[in-house]
Image (spheres, rainbow, N blue to C red):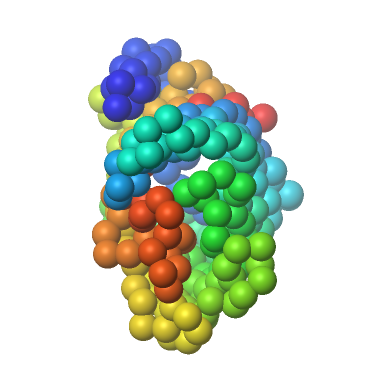
Length: 264
């Protein structure tokens, strides 16, 4: 948690010029960036995972972008004292296509986008056992000068360890509320509230549901260097690592991710 407060302090003390032309609060904006981050995950049994993650996004013209994310970290056991496991952690790759979008609309429907999202397992305890492909749409709405609303809805198909066993088909909904005032408490200030819920209707996960809440606070260091901190609390089951029998680490209870992105 010390890193969380450090990151917030750094954002508050960042350069006073607001980043022009970069709105990190809007997931439909086409940008190119890359940067490192630190993530700490606490599991239900008290174990933890600490990792360094790299996130990158490449804009392909005015309507498409490809995002990737991967990590490398260390799993630390507290139940079995001294247990450690180091290696690559889970990753993600996403293609995003933007249809007509009118961001000048302050109140009402702005447009929509679609995406194909691949999430794959790592080889460290706590990140093994879940692979998925999601296909969905993301409509966007303006709620005023500072508020925006997004409603991603996805079809999800999941596999177990090494992509060997198909564990089910499901659907997810993740309404996101973003607040990005023209004059915030620090340069480029924004905050996102992003709950999500997934429900499976076939396979080993038939009838299972899982939910989480993400809260992100971000800001700008310079016109092209932005940072943020995301806190996630899981509720019900952590479907990313749920198995018919109890997983070795227990579910992901909560995690915090602090990162810096360099836009180009």
